[in-house]
Length: 185
Image (cartoon, rainbow, N blue to C red; front, side, top):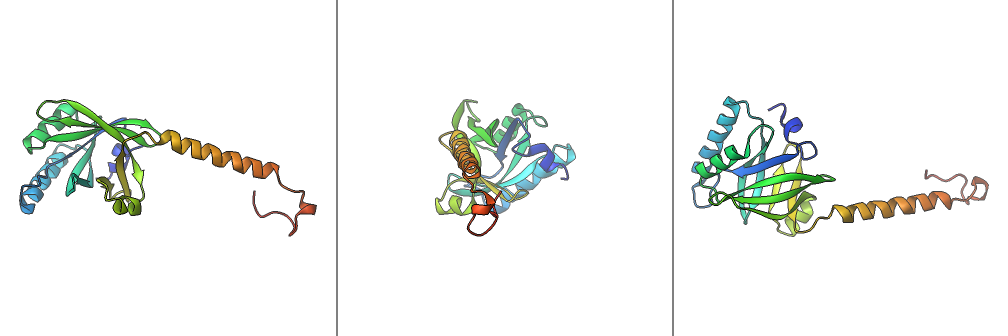
């Protein structure tokens, strides 16, 4: 779809869902058939979605990322139940590109907050053998972390900005620089 990025980027949507049609106990060809069926349905209904790849409870699967603006949660629950899913994920926009991640049990509708979803380098995700969501359209891996790391990232950014400003203040006059004028700004 042409409007995938505009509809479901992590920075724009306030609430998104991730759900799958895959089951670990089904044959691959059946999982693929169910996935294609859901894709066709979205296409016929003009529902924008982003295809994602994921590793969930150690199993690789294809899934759908959809915005709450275009698909109500009741529909996500219905489709998840139709494809015999135990749960689906709800991502609520938090801050600094981080989402609050909640798993919703399809049988009881009980939500359980599991942490904070944020991007992470591929090398780290694979080295740590983490479950993940991969967005091929952004070439980005996302993981759920137990703690909100946005404050830590903000603190690191503030420290870096502080040291940069101190370096600017501590500069020598150009005439005293050992090699002429400094190369940094």
